Length: 180
Image (cartoon, rainbow, N blue to C red; front, side, top):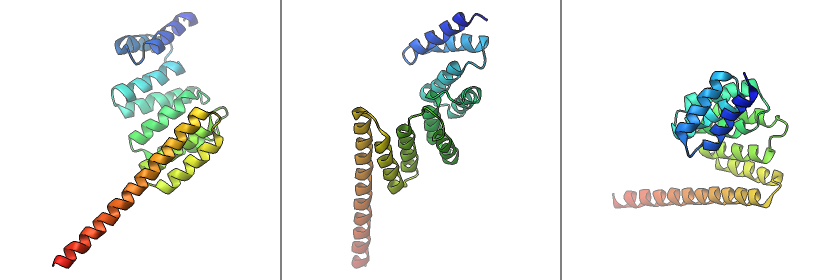
């Protein structure tokens, strides 16, 4: 197959996503029919399945196949981990995060943020804050550092809110006991 034609279909799909979904799907199908192991087409098909159709199982299959064909395709990791978290496959997400720490070229700050988000989803807020603080140490630009700081603040607010709810529920229980 002519590599230029394959690349043309992949580039058209990249250009169309997420605004022209019909064109994206058409070009991805052409690309995958020419080369079923095209890593970028598999990655983009995974994103399409997860982000547009909410089919996390199919997205997982596409992402896994993309990584099986090229372990150092860095774009896949973030999206694959998010899909695992969204699908509540927490053990699998943790395994992929652990592996992602070993992949050369993958930003460690980003992996630590993903670790923090996994902990947050599991309501392990102290662990989440610790992971995000570590992410901040590995951040190398102001925008990303600001993003991490906003994540830390958001989780701290969540913890404060949970503490207030717990205190209010204890107070309500005491009031009910006293009325009886």
